[in-house]
Length: 327
Image 1: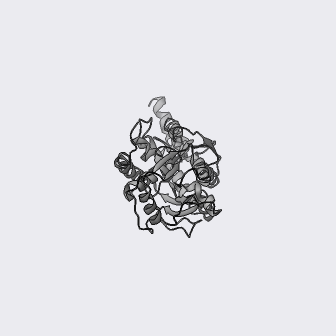
Image 2: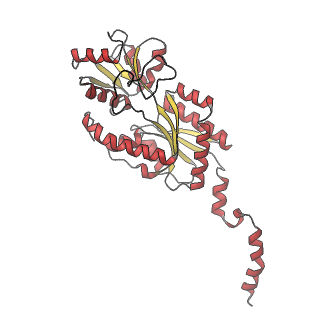
């Protein structure tokens, strides 16, 4: 018997007694995650609803996992810069994305991107966006039907502001114009806050944006409807678009989810997904999301991916039909 065989026989019983991490360094690395701070990339500027949401989710995930989660804002190109950054990051569980649904549904139908949905592992859906249609107080309408009648009598004279070309507010307004058979003028701004302020100042006639909610509560503008399947929790008196007798294709809501680079270990994805689901059941988290113009809406990873893929196909048909062309 050789020395090597003898040594193998002596060590074999010890291997049975050793814990899994001692014989499988890769598995131990997954079990131990996280051992250092996790970055949550938010592809929006600081201070907006998306940034508030991202910081809330990062904070609560950190508490749930007893780890440090830090937010990094990487805004630009309508979320493209931050999203591409995470797609190219190491798939080790230490870089996550607060992904906007529009990054995977609208943008792929507008221009060439350095990522796709297949560049990511889905952790889960977080929240739906609730947009509010509001008009300047001097506009002589108090309902969506009155607004449509007024627009038909004044073709091309009513303007709406949005956060920019192909933003949610632009798509909502253009779809409303198409489906209601009215002619509207789109005025793009650099962000939702600018569009909302322009409405308060009377520079545009209406907006469809969650950022207008504080102005509605302050009675500085007049709300007509929410573009969502349910009423806004902070504006319970405002009917939904469906309650006003209209159903437009783009009004089912967009939102946010958490994603990781493709190839992130399955145990890490599962651990994150479970923690995220738990976080979204917390009442204080749900209330905080409402204040950020969103509704907690947990979606398991596969359901989240399926919904994004379906909406990408929907926008492929819708955007050209409302005059939003590929660059």
